[in-house]
Length: 411
Image (cartoon, rainbow, N blue to C red):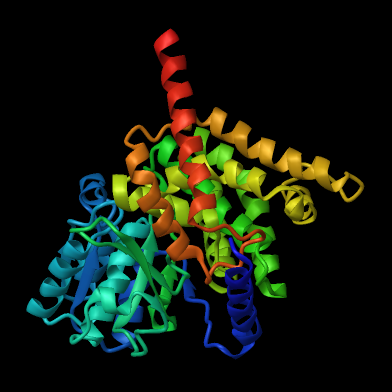
């Protein structure tokens, strides 16, 4: 990255860092069960709820407890269940039409980050009828208070139940972009471990590493606060203590609860302190090839951490202590290596292979441009990279995919 652009990026990031105490960040109020939602809805005098979810959630029957609670309370509801991974502008348009048709005045995002992001976008469109989603992309372009928005995460990973961002994919161009504004933070987050019990082991793993990525990228960035550092360290500690248990024993309620809280803390951390190039590259892969976001983050996290080099050793040392991998007497570089290697070993245990089979070399300039556009100047990364420098990660993925495919063929 050239010097003038570096100066611009760092000045932009510094201004946002200084502004953090004066901005209207807030944490959602926490509910421990979906059974608490009817009382919340009635307290806010809402009369019809739109539940936004996906077909997989419906097939698993995860909404049944919520539906029963709403019926018993006499609260009408409508379900939109066509949300896809990496939700699209079409999803938002269809759900918004249903919202207006049924005269809804409250929204529940029920599922992974895709359902929650779709719910946020629907809320934004409901209060900004004269603006397209594309016109709201970027920072602070929503402004208006959303209808009552509640989030029920069924995966312990995205942290979308805490954040001010909704990530949407343009259905025509496959360009993935974020809408960031304070009204998008859900009013309530329901951390109910029972809705996560049927989560398959592989999804448990990738979404868990997604949460880990949020915590790590927030912590190693240059816009941390006392609160975000504390939340990131809590998240890392909980993930390292519980992810293997949740992976191997999916019916362990306490491990599931701890992973939900880890995801919540990580979400609180990156809402204020932002993420980094892991997310920027992962979003480009999700938009172009529909690679699940948690999987993309899991593949990329060790690669990007190694590329940052020694400038993050001290911070990774503190994360390694939180993870129980090192102590204060461990040299910084050794602790950093222990932390990165622990992530790589975690991926190996969980069967997460470094394969993005769809990636094409001809797409790399476009993908790196998207990642550059998303990350710079907003993300306060430890080491700045432009589009040409970000291309290396896509070439790494091509090389790793080739190696994994060769290894599989030899077996």
